[in-house]
Image 1 (cartoon, rainbow, N blue to C red):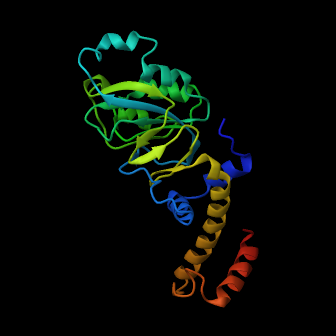
Image 2 (tube, rainbow, N blue to C red):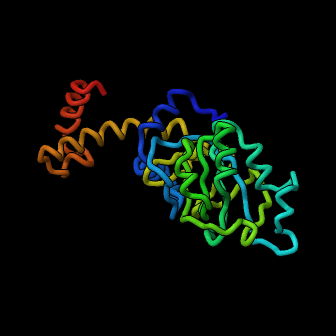
Length: 238
């Protein structure tokens, strides 16, 4: 449901969030890296369209254990409706003093075929979530139930997460460093340029390992750099 071609998805699997931020910076986007988030366990890139949940501060007359049985509860509704291949992104207002979700809901998202779960708050049951095949990103572990601090109010609306505006359908990419949000209308062109930049940076890294100076190489202001890159790329089948 991402709208990405198989080719674009494959390219995003092989690029870093660092490279993606540079590509988007060139297009004028400076605030697309979700701040303060950490991956629970290292693994391959997470890629998928955003499906969102928004929390506001809890209120004692509304947020009690009985509310979990309510089928309109936005947290539970969102988990049950998050589409296959999507990344469930939670706006917890940067408050990790109570959990945004726990292992049971994360397991349900995995069973539905979701690509990952992200919050700018915290997860409970983090040892168990870390063992899932589906990647998870959060600020820090938080054992208290979400009801102590969070009231779920909206599913699949625009949200803020990690200080970044996330709109439903935006492409979320996470690696072992963090998470970026790519505006959905830019995803294909960003992926194409990031893939090309990654190949060039691999060339640069090899040259630097061999003792080359970065001057004239990165950025490639020396006229000979392009010729050397072409030869290297052909030799390495890149």
